[in-house]
View 1: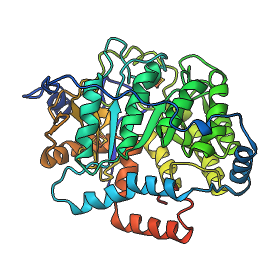
View 2 (view 1 turned 120 degrees about the horizontal axis):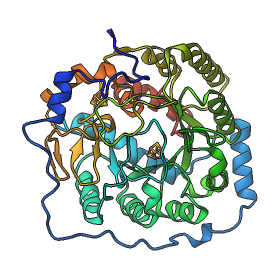
View 3 (view 1 turned 90 degrees about the horizontal axis):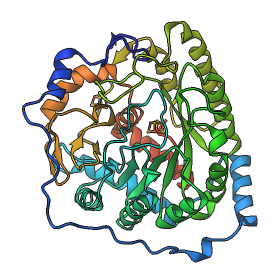
View 4 (view 1 turned 30 degrees about the horizontal axis):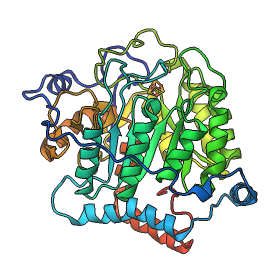
Length: 434
Ligand code: SF4
Ligand code: SF4
């Protein structure tokens, strides 16, 4: 069922939720408390390199693997990597369906940092006054998640690579416990030596966020600043067995850039995911650019964004790799016009976020909610509360991850996907659920 809201891409007030729900989330009876201090724990110092034989200049095998991907669109996966992906996604999925209880997470976002080295004008997801996660919290979080079905861990921020050694420890510790680790970064600090360490530690995929080719006002995530890091990362992925993809936010000021970034992704044989620029769902006291912001899409921009989405859909039909399905890209047109719907969000049940201080929330859009959903080791998610809340937030929400988890959680879709993968000998095991 569709509902109409204010245009979510252009703010008219500091938040988009209904006032009573916003008040409930901001001024709850109990505020979340960080985990009770215990004996301070630390993460082990990773051995580096664990695989010295993989550190050498690009060779014929790297070039042949890259050429094969460009020629056929397919990548060869050894059995060990297929098993790793199945341990990360498939086994937890089946466990989550079988085990009793409503809280059966598959994916956890670990906010190791809430600081950032950039200032994208649409972004409220950083505050440089907030201290990063401690090793104690990160270790307790991973140890706790290991007791649940969850085996996908996504260190994120802010910019997690502000502390590359910390992230190296997190990735190494989680990968040793068979987590499929997925890092989101703006790529500025992803220098070759950092890529080497993350690859050696067992990173599974890197979400490389970039919005423009050349930096423009309010959009500092520009390819011109990260092209060397990108090149190093993309060329070594076959040797180490990780993947990478672009992550691009569609704004009113980067329409041509989005096409060029999609082209760069295609020419390098990688995938790309898109967001449609959104105003904050909840009030963000620290956000500086709410009212003066050129990146927000206005009503007069809709035809231009529609054309871009049609162009992307056409490219996807031609075989360009994109994380978002064609219906998802089509839905972006409605969403920017304020058309929202209920889509079966599973946040707080099958995915969650862990804030820098170790408190929990169902999802990223509610990062700064004051509601008490518990803490690492003591979750307090309550399906009745979540369901009631989602009546209000779901039609306002276009969370890419939330939508994809909801879409993929259907048993029929998973079985169809598994059948398709089996037909291809599981050689395309990272493909979409479409
Ligand atoms: S790089 Fe990411 S976290 Fe930092 S300001 Fe930009 S969007 Fe926000
Ligand atoms: S719909 Fe789900 S992902 Fe979106 S704000 Fe609500 S709980 Fe979070």
